[in-house]
Image 1: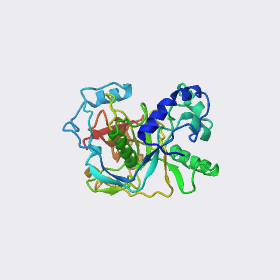
Image 2 (image 1 turned 90 degrees about the vertical axis):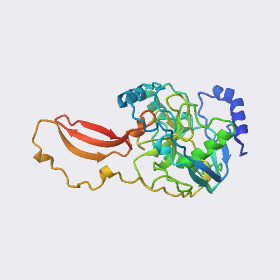
Image 3 (image 1 turned 180 degrees about the vertical axis):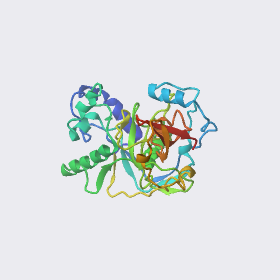
Image 4 (image 1 turned 30 degrees about the vertical axis):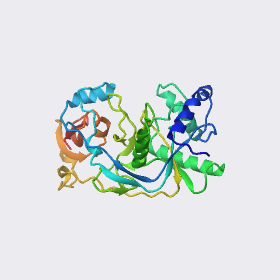
Amino acid sequence: MKIMNFRQTLLVAFLLAPLAMLAKDKLISTHAPEHPAWVPVPAGTFPMGALPGPDCLKIGNPIKAFNAYINRDVMADEYQGPHWDEAPVHTVAIGAPYELGARSVTGAEFSLYKSGYRKEYEVRGKTWDPNAPVVLVNWQEAVDYCRWLTEQDRKEGRLAADLEYRLPTEAEWEYAARRAQAEGWEFGEKDSGDWCLDWWAPYSDKSATDPVGSEKGMIRVYRGMRNDVGEKRITNRCGTLPEDRMSDVSIRLVRAKKGFRGTFREPEPVARVFQDVSQKKFDWKTAKTDKPFFSGGAENTLAASWKMRSVCPTLKGVTMVLRSPGAITVTCWRRP
């Protein structure tokens, strides 16, 4: 397959848009010959991350922030720039060239792998568009789709034996986005982000080669989301539980040499609030009361704060459990 640069890819995509509309009700495979599928990205180095502004940790109104997130309201008075997790800026090396999908995988393409996907999509009240980016898929489904497509295309001779499809790393995604921006193009889909390979991990000022996040974690990274005023910052980091099926997170493929092994980042340091904590198991049988009482704290590593980080960047979670006859769980927050 001929490999095109960013400008050629976008021009061909524009010219083929009418054909895509004519084929709207058909299942179009990723390897359809008329589709400009891949953009080449060379090996190289780049400065990953961004410097947060002075208002990054300014305490806002958490109730207002939560309501804005739920209702998709614009909070023009809230900080919209780089956040604490985008720093420090550090040098990252991409050790080998790869090719990135010029667009996200579509619902029609994913349906070739998961036959019941359209039904699941429409059950949620959504109008089916086979050419729209596939959404409502969790991280593992995205990984499994990549493996399935790798096997299919190898069998049919469309993929060399030494290549594979996989998700991009967070670093590969940002590197490609920076190159696109340098050529004057906006990178990513208009209304969705892309799952990445990484577990979320904090940045450090140390240089890194092919970083792949933490060795283990709770939050999988996705990239490419817009902030509350409609801006898409290419350094913006997002993430959620890998089991989540987000309505605005899709799959974008990387085609690269098989057997990729990146380097893990250092794990997030244990916060002081979690150090030297008693590990004695609480005996609920001794708690004979019909009144609510506090049972202690438990770490919820950014699981909720990721969902509201862009509108309430001061949040970092400590889940405190308030027990009552109704078993109420209350999440409290502190500054990072």
